Amino acid sequence: MIYVRRDPNLIPERVLRVAERAQAQLEALVPEKRAEFIEKKSHVWRGFARYLAKMSYGKCWYSESDCVQSFKDVDHYRPKKQAKRSDTETDDGYPWLAFSWDNFRLAAQRSNQVNRNDDTDEPVGKGAWFPLMQGSKLATWDDRCIGEERPALLDPAKVADVRLIEVTATGKMGPTRLCLGEYERTRVNTTVKLLGLDLPGLVSARQRTMRLVQDLVDQVEKALVAADSGAEAAAFMANQMPIGGQLNLLQRLTEPSQPYAAAARAQLRFLGYAELCAPVEQLGAAA
Image (cartoon, rainbow, N blue to C red):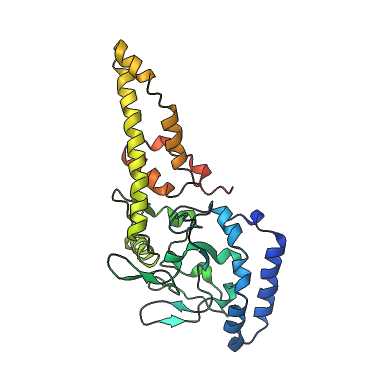
């Protein structure tokens, strides 16, 4: 997961107006008619897909996957019709956010739709899940206090949330050192599980990126050792192994436009080359 900056300037005015009209119609309906109306208006949120993709360079906002051979869903971070809080608790969710683009996240289908882990056969995928931390206030149609809720799922559109999760040395996702208590660690663990962020294919993709970073760093270090030896032959060898290209490629791998940039950044930190990561101010910048 990497921070995605939402940029309204990428969304055409006509698309926003369609959502506003649907919202106005929804607000006028009696409760019994809302779910049916939302279902008939699915084209409204689907119309945002290409613009959400521009904000994340075509990557899933949750997994960083850029698989071009799979459709990506417009996920409602807060579920629009039903919210599953636990294995035994569900409620009506957040119907008033069905057409709010602030609630939309671009999601790979394996993160968004309920499916199964290929290795463990356990169910994964967000589906209607939106658990809240114990003691959290619950927003409703009549009391839309979402700012007072304490979601268990991390949000890639919030810098503070993304700071809590990182790629570990094994290629799996885990809490950062900024997770100072059980609350933060629980959010990370819940997010990894429900969004399928440690599915075998994802872990393998991160590991490939991390191996590429390792190989490039090895080349750089060989050239540095040769250059520092002082011997004429070694200096000649160093000149035959220019490192500028490797350094540029390493930095490009950490830019937000690259798939699994979080894995590349993590590997550079593990190897002691954090200074090669793309500057923080570039993260989340839209194309």
